[in-house]
Image (cartoon, rainbow, N blue to C red; front, side):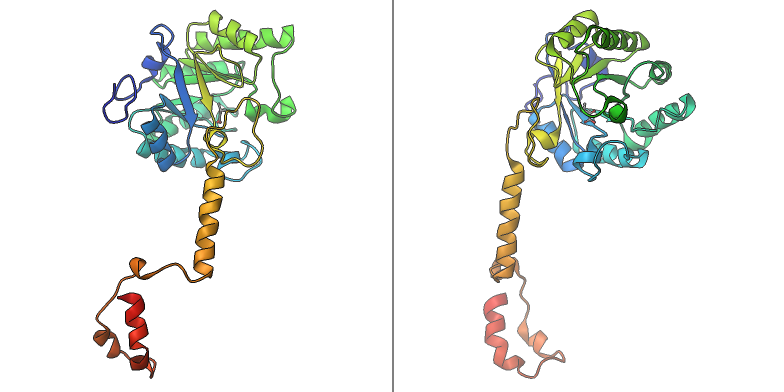
Length: 302
Ligand code: KIV
């Protein structure tokens, strides 16, 4: 047990430690984070891995989806998360466009996420043309996580965030993709929005751990989005989400109390203010009736 965080396991989670989770009888818990304070809280709560997901686009940058997210966005967010996380493995999504245009560019971008962001591992979506890129990045010593099923960077091709793999052909394609990714060297695979029985079959067909989101209970671990779990993501609660707190409502209530206090003159008060020797102030060039107001000023600021 880690004395600082209370979490089970090593002081710093590594990719090999996660890869061996099933063999060692451990279930993996992963959550997204995009900034240092959230990473610090997630880490203290004992998650094994923090995903700096390209879902930062929807959840933190105000975009409608993941597609506009840039390498600069991911590098900066990763560096912030690394500053917040002491124990968890930090995995960063390679954003749309950072690995689709060519292998050399993909490799350079993966290296940048490690060198400038401090990522411990990177995640890429899909198989097919991505496989040779995965092999090259793994060959350079950078651990890679795969991602199959619904892959948000292909949202336009898939017609939105829908469950994938409900038919024999599509299920076979996802199973084949997972096997090919394992052969290419990934140390774990995210299964997003696929039927639970298919996730079970895939989990039983490969040796690296599967991390599910909206894919049922048979995966080796789960990943959830910070904003969904904490009620920070707006009104809609997706079927695959368990909302553990309504932090959004707490924030709204707190900030509206602040607004009312400022508007009503209840904040700041004497406890929030600093005083000074009013004789010093009296020597300034200032309003003529200063002496008359002296008592009032002393009353508020002392
Ligand atoms: O970007 C992200 O948050 C993800 C998860 C949905 C797995 O890729």
